[in-house]
Length: 109
Image 1 (tube, one colour):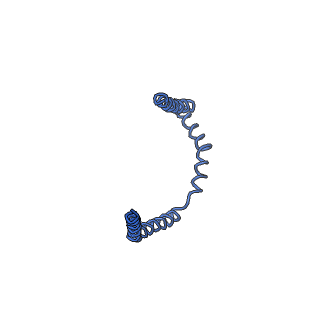
Image 2: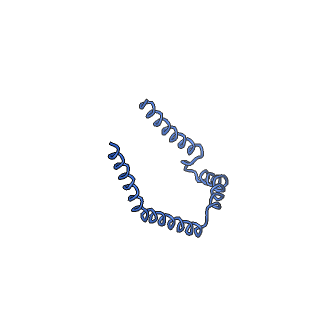
Image 3: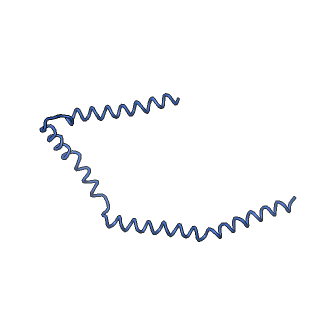
């Protein structure tokens, strides 16, 4: 099973590389003619870049990120210190419950 899985992973990786090289050759990425490069760039701007611009518009503004990051950081710091503040009481109650169950076990024997 291990050999077959390794062979499958290698096959997928090789297939992805071959597909990328084939796609780049079909789109004349490796061409020495500047017209082909210019046409490829125009296709890129026409079909690919508008999708990335739409995605960029959906991103929050830097101010929103700064405010949100600050509030999340403060919330995380507060929760850590609340946990550390309640740790002695939790440890004390855990030790007391262990002591009670141990003393109950000893007294029933």
